[in-house]
Length: 70
Image 1: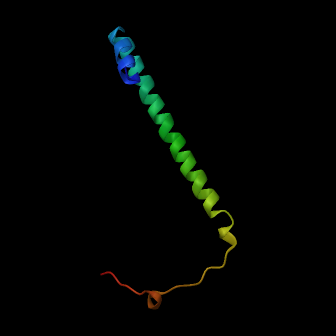
Image 2 (image 1 turned 45 degrees about the vertical axis):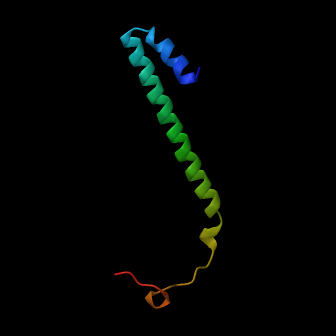
Image 3 (image 1 turned 135 degrees about the vertical axis):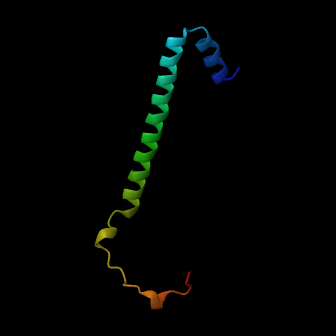
């Protein structure tokens, strides 16, 4: 039996107000998971760009473009 099925079987035994608490907790876990994903994404981007702020970059203008979109 899958974990989701086991959870569903147990939740079915709970009263409706308690089921709503379980739903709120699941929503909290999903939110927390998304926040951790955002944090790791920011950390990865920060690590990837570390040290680039001191780099010298060439100045490009429209003459340097090989393709143009209208």
